[in-house]
Length: 303
Image (cartoon, rainbow, N blue to C red):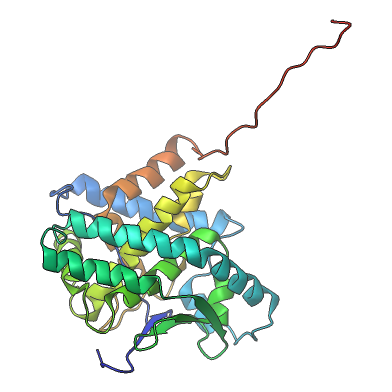
């Protein structure tokens, strides 16, 4: 990572995503878990096709012509990103600390200092800047970590709050790690578990991308917990992954392929896969808004 001008891209052509769970959680990954993960991948991508707010897959974004900043869909996406950025900063801060504790990286004073310094950097991000030339990418410049540059195609293609939070959280996690790579131990721990469970090669930059994606998924799940909706829970969960439901499932040296990313995420957090699959199988559970209070009154004339 260059010290002064290293740019991290969340790109459809770079195809980055992530996932993991806890070293103090489940240490086993069974054949049954593996089957569950594959079912969850299928359920996620099937849900994308049914959902009016389903995300555009990143290979499809890549094939689209550039969108001007004033394109209505890009404008809607930019407004969504601006609206969600404050909540996402808080979710990312909480998620990084949670993961550091789960991976036993928050115990000593030095470790805590690095993590706390990381989450402080998240709070410096105040702006999402639409960019025509960025197209289907989002990125941050680590020497100027106050702005997330967001391609207009990407803004238009992420059609839900859940999808937007997953990407915003990814970029904020890059900023949290910063030029000093202070989250590298956490990224490496996540990558080791993912590699063990999936057989994928996850080293170097791939580990960071995976760690950033994990934070995005966990932040999105917590957002769902905190925001009531009549929409089915599996639909809202699926939105955190749907941009990876590609036909062209290619990878590069720095990034897992999109579908391998979904696989790693579900393998590392099997409870998410179980929740998504079981809810789509046995019914559409919702996190419902609280019912308004009902006041009964009686007229003077009675019944």
